[in-house]
Structures are given as structure tokens and as C-alpha cells.
Image (cartoon, rainbow, N blue to C red; front, side):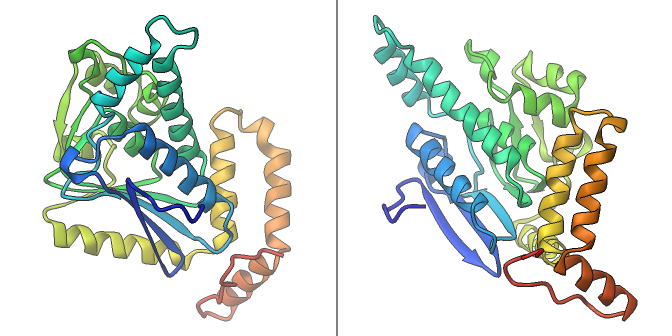
Length: 273
């Protein structure tokens, strides 16, 4: 990211993990256009760095994200009246690009879910690779109940929850608690309290960091590609990916460590060369 101060995010790094925290606690971390722009820049910067291993997204003040900031939407609606370009559509599309960028990050992503997980925040949780929540988390898709549409998050709802559950929640402006979210697969791990949530996050990060950096990214890219292809059509590409990784320095170290019954020593920058 640039050196320009951030107004809506806090970024910290530790042991190859980038922690991205939404910093609008008084608004339950509702997303403004400024936050969308800052998140987009943070994701692009993280994708370009080989030294990062995992990205953790969470909120501040006991909430993950309450969705879009309604004041921003009203402002965009006012700007679009009589204008050639539809400011509302542009605002909505900007959030859609953010969700897509988050979903296609090659490094593993984790969402830590507390308090409000609504609308766009619900969508980001659906796009994450791993989701951890405590029992304060409340999930909801309020869009249809206030006369709007969960437009950009719709594909991520369907992919994560399946069409039946996505319709059940989106069409009636549904709300579910953390236990229900865990039952339908939105939450991977549910704990009872904040301290246990931090412990669960640390355990997950330790497990991720034990795996090979480049192999992890390549595996995620292969899985994302497999969504839209048949198994047969992926055979040749997958074989090249496998052979390339096996012949890399990372593949050599991993297989040798397995044979020698020791922990592998991964290159700190994940160089598979």
C-alpha cells in the first residue's frame, strides 16, 4: 500500500501474517467508499508480496461489519439524480470488485467474526477461506427488508451456502445466530468467548504456517480454477502444476523432510524456485 495514512483500516504484520482490521467501531464497521478503496489497495498489495503467508480480516469494537454505510448509499443516490453516470451502480460495482479480489487472493484468507456480520460483511465472510466466530456473532441479510438487493454478494452466498440456504436467507431478510451459521457451513469453527476465539485463530494460523508457502498458494489457485471446469478438462493443467511444484526447491525440501522424518524448513519468502 502507499504511505498515505489509513482512515478506516489498521494493518499489522506478524510472522508472515497480515492482520487487516476494520476501524469504524462506532458504525459497527459499516463500509464506506473510502473503506472499500482502502481494502482494495490492501488486498492488491498483499497479493503482490511473496513474504506474506496469510491474510486475517476482522473488525474492531466487537463487530465484524454491518454491511454498507447507508449514508454513503443515500449520498450516491443524490449524486445520481439527473446525472449521466449512475453513482449508485458505480458504488455497488466497487464493492463487487472488492469481494472478487478478496475471493481470488492466492494466499489463504481468514475472517474472524464477532457481533454484527450483516449484508456486505456477510458476503465477505462467505468469500473467505476460513471463518472463525464466537457466540456474539449475528448474521443477517437485511437488504430485501429495506427495499434493496444483495446484488454483489449473491454469487458468494450461493457458492458458500448453496442455492437453497441462500434463497432462504436473502429472500426474507433473514437473521441467524452463530450456532445456526456453523450448522449451515458459513462458520468453520465456533467458540464460546473472545479469549477462545483468539486461541482458535492462533491454532489455525500455526497449522497454515506449517504448510509450504508456494504450494499453499498454488493449491488455492488450482481449487479456484476447478470450480468452473470438469475434472477431465483439468487433467493436463493439474499434471503440469504437480510436476512443477515437485521439482521446485520447496518440493525437494518437503519430500526430503518427509523421508527424514523431520519438520521441513521452508524458505521465508516461499520461493519455489
